Length: 257
Ligand code: AP5
Image (cartoon, rainbow, N blue to C red):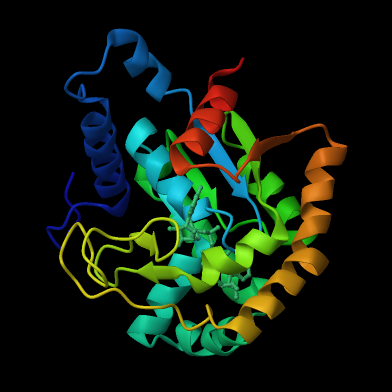
């Protein structure tokens, strides 16, 4: 149906985009057994919690590849606004540089907008949200109308290791892939394995900012974790092991009935 101006109506446009994305996602992935295909539709919403540096983005990337659902990193969404110099990015930047949380009035609308995109209909991975009790409650309200199974997974990593994981992190500015000079170095020093771009260090991966981020985590995010634990919904995974073993533990949790 076309509007008077000859353009597709917004409703029809959204419907068609959704159908196209859904069709793309149901295309059989080569080499995937029938059972595994069925399993892909079961991931639903995966909420990845854990301190800065625990490996949330590393595991999000693996889950996206495994289950063909998008990963939503609130940190990446904010960094994208900062990079583009949007009014929101300009405001968020000072909080991020200081190792503080960005206020909900800035954070929540971007998240809601991203979650409402058609590619999130089958499920998605949340990396970096919720980070406070208030955000956990908002998320509960947002997910209420979606009939998707939800897993809340905490990556447990000892604090003394987090420092090395963060100071050693280098990121590809082009494809966003993370490396670690101590634990996961690129094949060629300082260069991304995937696209050859020069790796950079995040501005909040400086020692004094890392200390503040870890402190913010203890004060603001631990209460959100306790909230899920008190509801019997928290699933703990040992994040202090090689990434493929962490991924296997997460997959086992997602596969459990
Ligand atoms: P965000 O980008 O979310 O940062 P973070 O939570 O501090 O987490 P990181 O991205 O630092 O670590 P990660 O757990 O993803 O670890 P990674 O996989 O990279 O947020 C940044 C800022 O944005 C916040 O400080 C805040 O200001 C703001 N913000 C974001 N969300 C917000 C919200 N909801 N509300 C308000 N403000 C918000 O791994 C770390 C390193 O270890 C890498 O080098 C990696 O290669 C390596 N590695 C990973 N796993 C392993 C492993 N198993 N073994 C060895 N090395 C590993």
